[in-house]
Length: 193
Image (cartoon, rainbow, N blue to C red; front, side, top):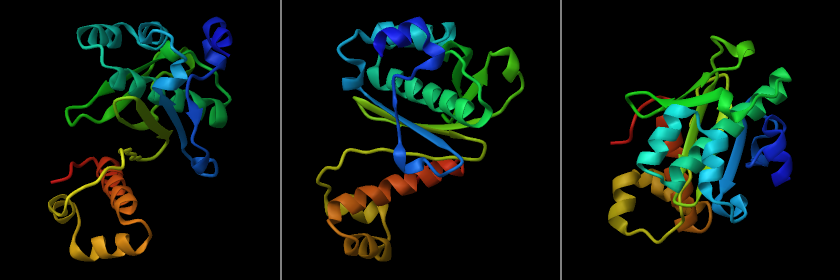
């Protein structure tokens, strides 16, 4: 598949599809460091990043940022293939950031001039997740780790914490709740305070 991507990148994805979103109007894609199969991340940067994105990456070559761009572009490309029967190259998309930090897709394919499609992305050090669709979107991802009571009290109301604790393993559900709040904040274009 790696060679197929190299020869015809518009027909292949580096990321894997998020199956839980299959029946929704959006498409989700996930990528991890392991999916790069030991290939130097700079190779993927050259295959995915437009000149302005490449310059930003060169100034600060963070893998998490690169994985986020790969996931976002593959989610957008997958949505276009699924809903518009269009196959485009990753270099026909640029991910810009608004002042708020929210990602915005800009298309350079002639068939997509003035086309608007929403994208939301989240990344960790070695993993990224993105969703693309026509409406407002929000997504988040987090490592599940032990959190103290101060964090729980800061993030959740007493009733929210009680409901999440009753769902199952408390720490896991607290992180799910946190990701849901972060995704909702992104959906509505607001940060959490």
